[in-house]
Image (cartoon, rainbow, N blue to C red):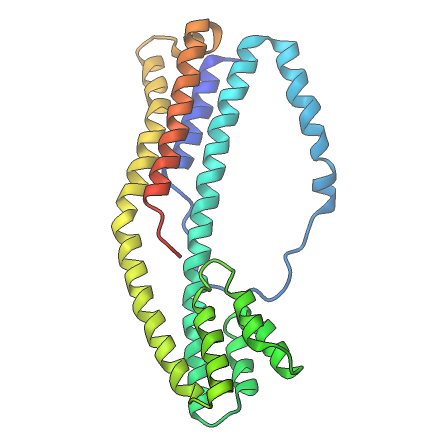
Length: 261
């Protein structure tokens, strides 16, 4: 493999790591995600190919493939974390909107079962609770089960309010309105915290991508940094240490900047 080609791949992956894909807008899930069994059934071909290439082309290719694999794994993990944070924020917003609908319909005099139907059209987390209410099941238990999803923790308070209303006859509409107001105030804090941590996330991605740009700069100056990193024992040690420190730094930064859900 041409070392300059490996450098180009590393730079491309670094750019992907530095500039994440823009998150999609809020959307509602209308059905299960279709699966592609043919693609899954062919994944076993990756293993033999990954073993055959290093054997045929030598240790340098093996080291290069491992380095590219580590960088690609870092990119995938960062993308997954970005999507998870976006999905959690979207779910929190949907729960608050559904609580507003639930409270409005309860204030209008609709029974809780019918009010849950309106909330279920806004947030999928209310669908199981609505089904339980229609069948005479344990609605608070269904809400607590739905609250296990990231971003839907506010449904635990709704389950408690439902139990209180059933046992004491308290005004469920008033409890739901107060809960929606409380969650909305918490969401403002969440967004302010996420905005303040956005700079830390961007800085971590830029710092993680600097080694790849440094390799490209070395080639532009006439040096051969990838030959040293992939073909010499000292270079292997430096490459392994650099990748390990990059992985540790990204994990540490992500952990420090994680917003509680």
